[in-house]
Amino acid sequence: DAMVIQNPRYQVTQFGKPVTLSCSQTLNHNVMYWYQQKSSQAPKLLFHYYDKDFNNEADTPDNFQSRRPNTSFCFLDIRSPGLGDAAMYLCATSRRGGGGHEQFFGPGTRLTVL
Amino acid sequence: GESVGLHLPTLSVQEGDNSIINCAYSNSASDYFIWYKQESGKGPQFIIDIRSNMDKRQGQRVTVLLNKTVKHLSLQIAATQPGDSAVYFCAENIFSGTYKYIFGTGTRLKVLA
Image (cartoon, rainbow over all chains, first blue to last red; front, top):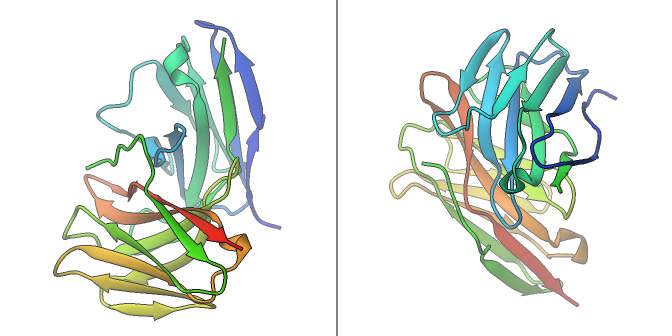
């Protein structure tokens, strides 16, 4: 089945130790999104790629970076995780960014920072 | 703008009753909206969508209503079941240099047996 896959599902890292979360999709969608979701809050968009074009949200900290080496894969790099970065990180895709195209989510990666 | 909330509003509904979950969106130019269901520890799951040229759309047991005049969306769930217990989010598709989705605050639905 076509889907959005996130690995790992649970990630534990130490304060200040770089961590990378991965997302892959078999939908061949143009757009890939990364969201941060904290407990009892709505998903907050960090950035997204439209094909190879990177679009950063104005309030996304510089500590968060992303890479999209090909259509199928997208990575979220947290260069120096702080305790406040503990959250669920959600990857999503859509065929195109506008015109009413459904957005599909992966299961998320739960990040714990010790 | 982005929604930030520390406490999700909760709707408690008796099993078998109808549920109505409301959402206010921010941008009058938004042209597409999605309702998501999110169960604990899982990613959001698509329920139903609606385009801005419509004011009502029905699915299986769910109906979405759109009132563009007051920038309001609602999700109606008929004959609510225990499996409907989850957090529900609306998301609007907006253009701000590029198209993206902005989520509403969310509502926790609790189904009482």
